[in-house]
Image (cartoon, rainbow, N blue to C red; front, top):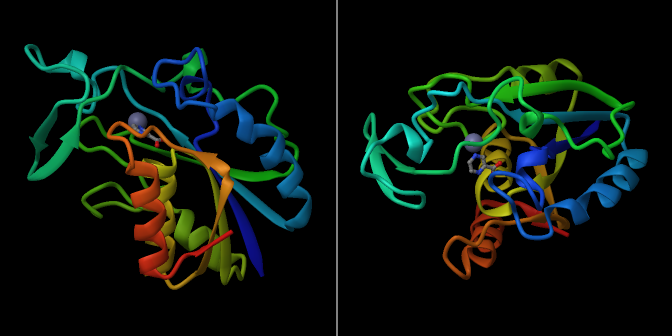
Amino acid sequence: MKALILVDLQNDFCPGGALAVPEGDQVIPLANELQKQFDLVVATQDWHPRDHASFASNHPGRKIGDVIELDGLPQVLWPDHCVQNTPGAELVASLDKTNIARVFQKGTDRCIDSYSGFFDNGHRKATGLGNYLKSKGVTEVYVCGLATDYCVKFTALDAVQLRFKTHLYANASRGVDLKPGDVDRAIEDMKQAGVEVK
Ligand code: VGL
Ligand code: ZN
């Protein structure tokens, strides 16, 4: 049994959004088309409280892009994004949601960020996605979405760790490229870890 994981297809990650990923909106038609090949489709949703520790605005004197230490983990500081119950946090309107069996929210704890759809960045708490997929008999996952060099990457790496055969749809994903080359390096890291990139 295989499942499609749609990562963070939210307004704030599309052009015009708070943490816009270049060409982020271009993956939506592809994501809609890919869904037709799957019996099980799930989505992740970045879902932060307004006081989330990943927001530069919550660290006076710091700016967007700075890296701080948060509870022993390096943390990139981002613009305020995907704040719970705001339009920016909603899944993109043009995304076909009729086939999405469940949406797993992440980044809800103000003290720790969560790039992966499976665990927070410290692997302290699970979102339930892993157990859900296993309960459905899923052995193979296909990942696409936003952003290739953050949430897509860490979702795919955790999927490998959880022993799912893991595939990345690179053309249905886009990255931030905070540092030029980040997306290419992320794809290389995923390949190294055993992700099949298509
Ligand atoms: C993401 C940065 C911060 C992502 C989420 O969805 O890739 N990136 N929060
Ligand atoms: Zn976030």
